[in-house]
Every structure is written in structure tokens, then in C-alpha cells.
Image (cartoon, rainbow, N blue to C red; front, side):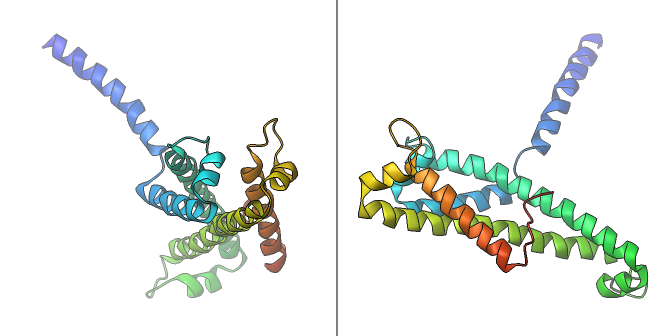
Length: 193
């Protein structure tokens, strides 16, 4: 009996860290979003260019999904955190108008939750523009590289063998598109918090 309690206690102690670790892992939705993004990026880049961006091996797709599932999770968390701040500020400014705008039913008790949900979706959609810009940039870089590989490598490559040129091109062009989006949106930047 004493041995079983000790074993049970040891198993319980091991289970707690596993649960804590699992909470930090990307959700299935984050993984699905990352898979779609990586498919789109691979299609826009071409297989060899895509592989060069993620280490050059046949496991490039897996690396892409792993990196971007984590990124998508952080975007989702940031969108929700910012939404909660936005809704709190709006509620604090005028609680009655806030309840009327977001609440349902006679008591409007669910106003805060509805507000956070709406703002989080909008914030996440704004963050997802960056992914779309990566795909647009990859298409542009693929075309530019096809015109003159050597000039492309010289222009964008920063390491000794210039093999990082495609990734650098995508990064630079995607950032330009992000900046244009921010200017078009009136200078708002949802990627900082």
C-alpha cells in the first residue's frame, strides 16, 4: 500500500509539468493555420527557394510549420490581450454605451466578452496580413531571381555563399508591404504590444 502511494505521488508529480508544458504548445488551429501558410509560401517560392529559407533540407515544410504554429499562437494571444485592453478602456470611458453596443439581452452582462471576441478577431486578422505579405513577397522574389540568379544573390545575399538571398529578399519585401499596410491603415501597428 505504501509503495503504491509513493508510486502514485511520483506519477502525479510528473503529470503536472506535462500539463504545464502542453499549455504552451500551439493549438490544433494554430498548426492548421501554419500548414496553410507554409503551403502557400512553398507554392509562391518554389520548392528549392522554400527549402533555402528553412535550412535547405527535405524537412523544410516541417520546420516552417513548427516555427509558424508558434508564431500563430503568439499572434492569437497578443490579439486577445490587446482586445481585452481595448475593451476595458472603452468600457471605462462609458459603461452604459459599452453595454448597449456589445451586450445582448436585458441585462447586457455579456458585453465585455462579446467586445473582446470581436476585437480579438479583428486584431488577429490584422496580424494575418503579415503572412499574406510574406506570400506576395515570395512570388515577387521568385520572379526577380528567375531574371538573373547571380545579380539576385549579390543584391540580397549576406552570408559567404549568398544562399540566404531568397529569405532576405522575402523578408525585405514583406516588411515593405507591411509598412505600406500600416500607412494605409492610418499608421496603426498591431504587431507591437
